[in-house]
Length: 459
Length: 131
Image (cartoon, rainbow over all chains, first blue to last red; front, side, top):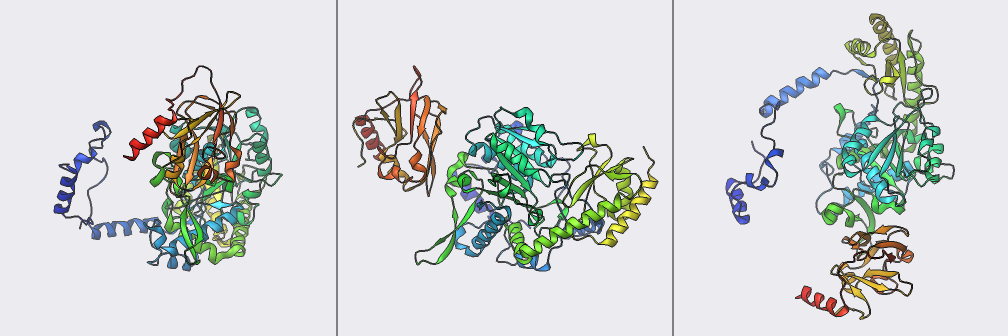
């Protein structure tokens, strides 16, 4: 069955109206060298019955492992009501509808979402969401170039303790627009970015500094010192934060000794009611201060009144969006994630500030218990000293990969092997526990790890 | 019909230029341009000290419908962006040749400028565009 509403006669009529002989001819503008002739490795189509069966088999193969992997996506309990409401027909669309103002309910939901994110991050204004956390870092960097008018360099400092996948996406997205992303080392003792590491940039024109809190290792950065250093030099602060952690940690809008706070705040919204789901879809969020709102990419829903004085919602600041400003829009590559934002808004409504705080506190407690329990296993110790939120790096006296394979055989996903991303750490594993892990889960991991470590010969 | 003061010079892209006594120039958008844009809600002016080239987008005027670039007709160093427009963008609508000026700059000596028109020629251009 082809889900295309146009009959061959319709297509013919449309082509002849514009004086083109075939649909293929519409793509003539793309040079032949750039055209893909065939898709290698893409199998032939399957019918609905076949694909349904294949996917069920694949889903079964996933099993229900006990997951201790974080590294940017976190397993949290999602109240059943979240997706029951999100998948109602009235909400079940990935995008803001065309003729957006005809869908007041959708706009109100996005408005509530924006209010919640602005409040959570302690910033003035939020957009309607972005694609994911990684692309949000790229967009924030591009926005900093537009908004930080004192800087001409297009140089963005990205500490190595920032999620390396976020850096990779930022380079892929913004690297060709002249932005340069430069590494800042982390302290081998504490796993955080020391202000001393920034000294070499004194007196240079830098556009923005990215600060991730908690950082990729789960460690807590000295955000006040880093923010003060940047602001004293006219450098924008791009905060990358985990929304769950904000229920406990000071929000980026209040970072710095003068409380001026970050300039742009981004992150991945997945922890707010979005299942891990093999890596996506998730959504990115972005908030900023009112003075930079016109440089913020994406759409914003505003509250207003209609002719009769009744409350209503409308898309606002559209003059900077691509359907009006074309190539000069604030972004031509961003999108919002309406459905996932719907889930996040309902999740936050159901949890409330107190519920979110309990979730964050329980996750922190479980992670501490996990680290204490795992480091009691012979040959396992913490990589870094200092406080962490809900994940931490462990060092082993032997390679991590075979240990993880052994754990997986017992239904446990033991964490993320850092060998490829941070080879200098040696045999390092990033582990995470959230409120979903019980004492008995942690015990199971410890027992399995003891056996797995024994089975792998020490290096 | 829009107001075209005879003492100013004009560009095809609807900017006006006024030469001040100290040799700097003041730049804004014409009455015709502000009418076409409609009510402005935001104006972004360049910071003092910035160097601009001929034809470089140097300011942005934003109405509820569109955000448009303003091109510098002259190369030079910006001495001042109109600070009053941040709070009062409607000055560009109400007084485009006065309080609604966008920026002042010190022309680079010997640098090329965009083709500037007299008021009479600019009026002709408007008549041609309207026809």
